[in-house]
Image 1 (cartoon, rainbow, N blue to C red):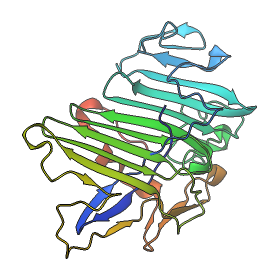
Image 2 (image 1 turned 60 degrees about the vertical axis):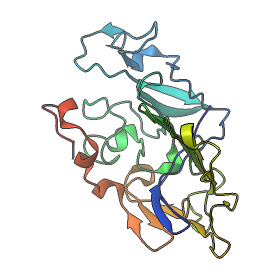
Image 3 (image 1 turned 180 degrees about the vertical axis):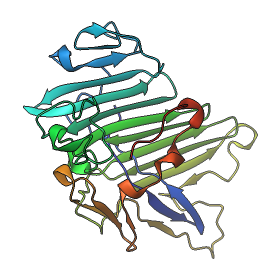
Length: 285
């Protein structure tokens, strides 16, 4: 099973610059990652539009109408005696699926009447100290995410709390197969000088199969001339996270090997949404 989390990387191969994303997979024996309802106490479970016997669009045992067709689960579970918010969005048999565990330190499942463990800031008036999710701190979250279309499948896996993710991507069409992986699962969020381990392969298919042109970053390809110098620079995984001022270290800063930084809560999340799937709704500030 695939598992683990990521952050952007820069790969330079034979003079070609590519922006890519990390992926990971070391099974954490404690987190199940089965895309299933796990809670023993169903009173705090919302389960909608999922292909399972317990999918009932209910909260606290009460069945209700649900206007959005997206498969969705939100519940409270205990792993090794620690409380987590467990959410599943989408379906692994479809083109998108995401499963997340967020360590919870607050008293309550909801805050200000909103049943939402993913507030913009875990210390704002809607999320607050009540639920204590610390959702912006990667050291309190494990997750896996799958995105797929006709030619490409990508998995993002962060299956441990303290270490970075594994990212894998497979592209297959009639003419070519491309396999990419970056494994950062042995690097913690306080280490900036260690890159992930990259595997990057390309194989020509169909009429071009067997013709010089296949590529493997771990092997100097024969189609480069003797005078060529194959250079590969991997910086994926060379970043740190510094705890921020919000609940449980949320609101912190990612710092990259080149001195750049990124603050998650300052990003324009409208860039990541489709208006036709969110008519009448605005991103909460």
